[in-house]
Amino acid sequence: MNIGIDIDDTITNSSDIFVKYAKIYNKIHNIDHSINTDELDQSKAFGWTQKNQKEFALQYLKIILQEALPKENVIEAIKKLKELGCNIIFITERKDTEVDGMYALTKQWLDDNNIEFDKLVVNCDNKLQECINNNIKLFIDDNYFTCKQVHDSKKIEVLLYKTNYNKNYKNLEFEIVENWNEIIEKVRRKL
Image 1 (cartoon, helix red, strand yellow):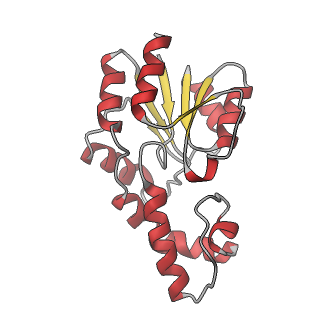
Image 2 (cartoon, rainbow, N blue to C red; image 1 turned 60 degrees about the horizontal axis):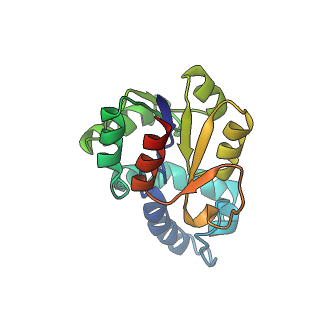
């Protein structure tokens, strides 16, 4: 079975690190905004304009992605998925350009954390199309809207990884998971 997996906030704690640096950024730039970790939209979560978002990304994004840690049990869970015969394909929106080398940075992070995978796709603006291209049977992501798009294709099953900013979604057509042990159990039942 081919399993497509998002990276940020699905296998990493990148939001925690992001918030840490957002507080620093807001202090430096005198942005008086009560940070709301339940909000995905950066203008609502941090009080940022488009200019702030771009400036923050240029200054802190690489640091955040390097400092991020694997979520609890994710390394063992992915190893177990591989043992069960699953192919692991990471599909992320992380933008890759010659300037930032996001593919190399992400691959290095996966290697450094002993996270096994078969393929890494960065710079993905259309995860549904990437899932179709890679014959994904199960897709795991923390973004409700991405999960809904992939689910609504009626071809691919999805699991929404629960985070602060998606915790209020209820009665969905697809399942919400809270940890990687739960994901392993769901995959075992499907095989």
